[in-house]
Amino acid sequence: MSPADVPLWAALPAALLLVCGGLLTVVGSLGLLRLQAFYARIHAPTMGSTLGTGCILLASMLVSSAVAGRPVIHELLITVFILITSPVTAMLLMRAAILRSKD
Image 1 (cartoon, rainbow, N blue to C red):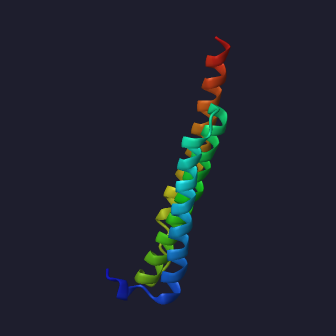
Image 2: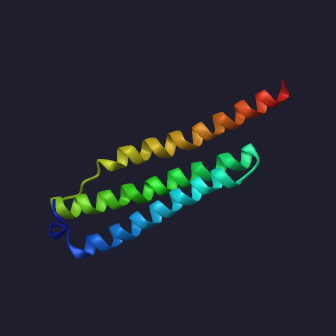
C-alpha cells in the first residue's frame, strides 16, 4: 500500500487521530514520570494507553476500510480487549497497593 492508495477523505482524519493518539500516549507517559504518589501515577498511563490506543485503532480502521472499499472492523476486537483489560489491570494494581500498605 502506498500513500497514493489512501483517499484524502480518509487520510486527513486518520492523520489527526494518529497525532491525537500519540499525544495522549506521551501525556500519559509524562504523567507516569512526573507524578509522585502511586495512585496518581497509575491513573495517567492507564488513561493515556486506553485513549491513545483507541485513537490509533480508529485511524487504522478508517484507512483499512478506505483502501479495501468495504468496512474493516478487525480492530474492534483489539479495542474491546484493551477497553476491558486496561482499567481492570489498573484496579488490580491499586487494590494490591492498598493491601500491601496495610501490612
